[in-house]
Each structure stands twice: as structure tokens, then as C-alpha cells.
Image (cartoon, rainbow, N blue to C red; front, side, top):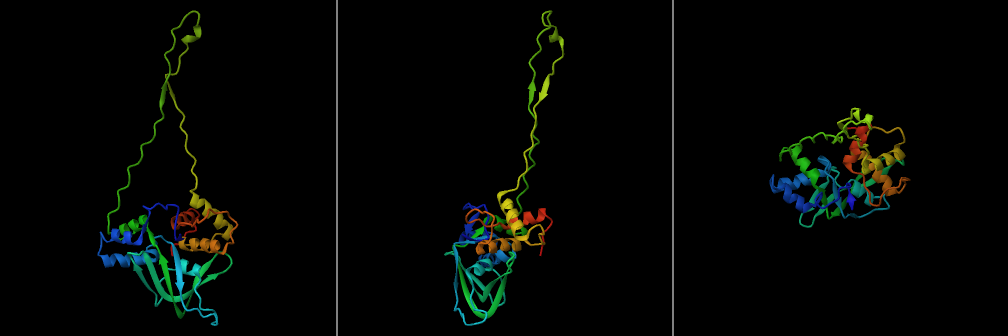
Length: 266
């Protein structure tokens, strides 16, 4: 599926747009809930998925440059809010609609991509079977003060190493004088600390980022890193072996940049 996805692809994590609307409408008016979810991917960073994005436009190949929106551009910039851009959703059908200027995909050959907005013509895009990441929606509602934040779980107790009691010493005898030597009464078991490892998302992002930027990683936002990777995937120029249908998650991109001191907030 297309969109801004992650590893957590269980039905509980990814809810259809109509189901997510019913959830949000428990806390605010239904019209407010619709507006909030339509703005959620761009304004609040809520991840989304869809089955496909269809582009409907009257293409003019004689124009210079040609008036044509590529499927890759429509997917990457579906929720981008430009002047004269309108969004709507058929909530029962879980279909999102975008009407706005033609958008072409700009690439510099180094993994960087950006939208090239061409207002000379309008383009209609349709995303089918739209799903929102439910955890992201819950976090959005918490940040907006619409629902209370769940209390943090209590800290786990420090594990105590089991104690092994020594067998009672045999009584001293003339035939066994060494039995008079003192013996330990308690032997603590050895505790081991598990090795910290990167998650699958961060490991793949690390390899791909190294291929794209080399050792000189610039300051980036999670969205910029995510879009750079997705652009290379669509162009099929990556040498790093990736799982089929893998997409970099926004949260994993953020953790990767934070750990390297390269996170740019805006």
C-alpha cells in the first residue's frame, strides 16, 4: 500500500478513514473531526496509507514544461496545501480527493526531491481505501488536549539475582580433615545485560542514508529524509537491499536523525 507507513501494519494500528472519523467524533463535533483528519497528515504528521492514487487531468504535452502530474508526485505530495488546493473525503467509501494545481517531481540525482507546482492547469487526484495510523491520531488528540494522556507505566522492579544455598558441610572426621575448612553459604548467580540493538527500521534507514548522503549527513526533518528515501526507491537507484514494499516510517527517521544530532525541527 502507498503512503507514509511503518512496520506496525496490524488492523488495530491502521484504521480506515471512516472508522477513524467515528473514533475522533467521540470527542469533538463531526464536522470538526472531518476537518481535523483532513489536515492531520500535513499539520500534525499523522501517517496514512492508501491502496492507490489515481491522477485525472487534461495533460498538455505541447506545453513547456509539459503539464503532467506523475503518480510519484501525487503520492508524495497528496496532502500538500497550496493555493487553490481543496481536499475532501468520501468517508463511507474511505476515498480522499484533492483538486489543485499540477505538481511535478523535482529530483537532483542525490536523493533530494521537492514539488514543482504549476498553476497553469488543475489536476484531480483520488486516493482509495485511505487508512490513518490510529496511534498517531491518539497522540494528536492528546497534544490538542482533547483526550487525557495515559499515565506512564510504573518502572519495572530491578531483577534480583537468585541465591543458591550451599549444601551443609559434612562433619569433620579424622579420615577427612579437609572437611573442617569453611564453606560458602550463599553463591550469587551471574546477571547478564542484553546488548542494545537498532530496530529493523533504523538499521535499514542507516544503510540507505549512508548510500544517499555518505558520511556528510546534512540537517534534515524526518519528512525530508523519508521523502528522499522514497524518491530513490521509486527511481530504483538504491543498491541497498530492502524488503519488498518496505517504506521508512516517520518516527524511525526522527530517531535516526536525533541519535546523530542531525534533526532539523523546521
